[in-house]
Image (cartoon, rainbow, N blue to C red; front, side, top):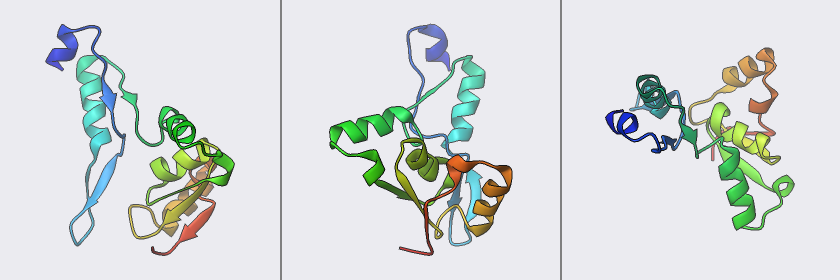
Length: 127
């Protein structure tokens, strides 16, 4: 945060805002990059620009760079809040793999909360 305070033109860039990561054979929940980013934002008084999933900037770059049609593209991942949201927000189809951070209960929780942006088009038990 020292450099951000010293240089008002410096930009705080986040590669992702994942709240947690699953680590180890027992899938322990440990703070993810998002926890660190939020701490730096609070300490610096700056808002980070997220260039990773679910960034609309990243989606636009991918679609334009590879000349894709979003509606004919599927984003597959293991997180509802980044991977699935990224695909849905970008107008893509989305696929959730249940061998990562999210599980069937996570999908049900999102549905009950009415968060349609994190509901996958397809669900894959494993890859």
